[in-house]
Image (cartoon, rainbow, N blue to C red):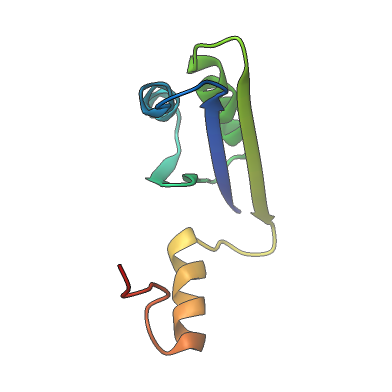
Length: 104
């Protein structure tokens, strides 16, 4: 089983959130998950749904603030193991090119 998730944790504040987001990302290090942060969130992969929920909770709790917004989207494909990279590769195969823009 492979669980792939998109996690977004941020304080509801004015100004830059990057310092608090960094705390959330750093909290993931204590868990048996692979992750990659992008501008809209952090993609997490693990073989254990419980580990995913624990990591997401730790990331949420790592952010300081009176109000914290957390979004967790989970793809729990139980019939076979599929990595996040394989999902992107499948889209690339259909496109016939990398699924990225060359514009600036």
